[in-house]
Length: 85
Image (cartoon, rainbow, N blue to C red; front, side, top):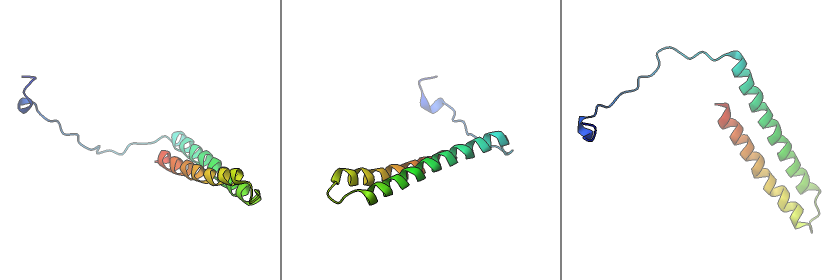
């Protein structure tokens, strides 16, 4: 009776009893990727601070570009942290 939901059995997923072994090559590749994303985010944050610091007060476009670049670098940091898990 495929159409009757009361007749279907529900399966229970059991957690693994043995830990999963992660190959060191995979672990270090993940760490290298995390460090690369962090490197890009630090460069973007430094560039945004430099743009704001060295732009003229009358140049609104340059200051806006620097201010917008900082949340982008923060987004890169958050993305790197989420991918590193």
